[in-house]
Image 1 (cartoon, rainbow, N blue to C red):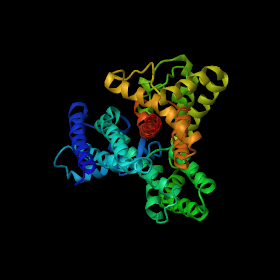
Image 2 (tube, helix red, strand yellow):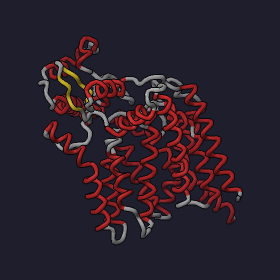
Image 3 (cartoon, rainbow, N blue to C red):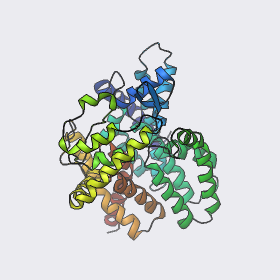
Image 4 (tube, rainbow, N blue to C red):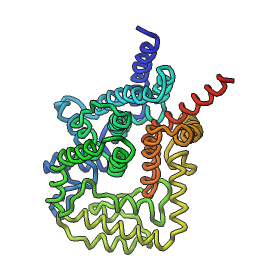
Length: 413
């Protein structure tokens, strides 16, 4: 067994223990918030629903379904013998460990084994990624599927002949059912394949059609319930959350669930919004109409004060790529978190410029498109600290590229 393989296995094993320690320190014993409501409604009504109003259970598309399915699968596998949340954490640790292997495979498409091993170690022990294992959120699953998607996409760009299109379609479908913003990533990737890769028109069309076919049952379910063809119906609320009188970089965190109407914050600026929400008809289109109200309110806010919200948008972009200088999250400014985040952000920029502009590396161009698409798109809404996990992998690769470039320059001298 060579030294690189030994080190790689050591990284995997040690990272598992570190993740277990993180879970033991930060874990939650029960579901909370939106996941708890969805879970309880499904247990009671056997329906994926978030709102139960006037004894009517309303089918939901407010939350992406895949992570809920993951939670419920762990519930079934526990056989009610123990708290299934423990099994969720075990599954997330396992999935995040596989993600380390996937990231190593991506690094090997850019670097030699030694540099790839360094990048893998950074990824495996990055504090925010370690902490994500202790969250009841889609973070670990999202990283896993995004890395799978990027791995397959890079193979297509690298003109690999044998690409399992069915497996690739399943990965794309999973990403679409996990995160709303993946729609944009998927479309941009197809465009990239069409214009910057040779003979990929047929492949791109087949990928699109097979992905749509796989998610079609869920699309039809939403259409039959609401009359609108969609995957996730939350963009209006998300836009308002990040663009209202009380919004900061992290948005204004309140769900305005109608069952808690008497607890809604008492702000005169929200009077018209509340009046519109109170007058929504209770039927299967409740979520659609509710989201339209939030969208229109956010649109009005932005148009009435363009400068304010443009400046806020720029702050969100900077926060996503670098750090939030005004975060409300506990321990956000802990050196263990903030130092590696800032270092990566700084080192990644010159690496990105070298890879895209000087080397004109097609794979680098693709990764840069994905990273900036995520940053510029999600910043339209709001930026939570955990969103950073979606671009850490990109920043590690760009940083390593810069370090390798500088090292080779000095080596030649």
